[in-house]
Length: 75
Length: 254
Image (cartoon, rainbow over all chains, first blue to last red):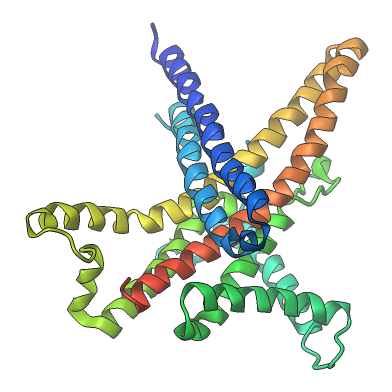
């Protein structure tokens, strides 16, 4: 298999990580919404932590995208 | 991918300074546009009416937001970082939003450029935040700053391992900060470009294909533009929030 084909297949496999990250991000927001509906008064105070959790989960998904981009354009 | 190309606007031969090329690029142009727009926005709201008008209310919403964020995350010492975090947040927000403007001048080669979609720019912003953290940490606490990496109550045996792990995770911070903003902006614009190429290629293949593939792609582009506006705001907020959290680590060691 030549280099170019192998790189593109690798990039396709790396993009699976984006789908896994969507599960993580959905988890963060889902937990927040579920507990916010139980205790609406305390929800606004925790909004900062919601976005911190979202940023961390999103970053790891973006790392998967980054690997795919590196394989296509850099390596 | 041409939308990410950095082009020197006035040529690059005569723009040399001490061996470095400092040509005025489209990236620099959009940074200037963001700075001017931000200056006009804040200047327009600098009135002191007791009952604020709309513009003053908008500016005060943003300043109050950053004030509250720093008060929550850093405490009383956070007040002196409000100018930096406010400038950082508003600059990144304006940069992200200006890059989404659909200028209908693509035929002439003029297009909106998101300068935060380059790792060089976001990396420098992240290095600035990290440098502030290091300077404040070592100025205020001296070598006691290293106690940040050994949480309270770790057993003596585990201290070497925990120290190394915490040190690594601390050193990765500027990298992750810059990377998050860069990839979020670049990914959004790449997605919009791919959808646009769907519309153009399908329309070139025939009217039937154009309607079948082009129409849904167009509506998807509208929806993703709305999502990108949200992501622009969220990424600017996350950058400022994490910067203030890291400053809290430096000011109050845990």
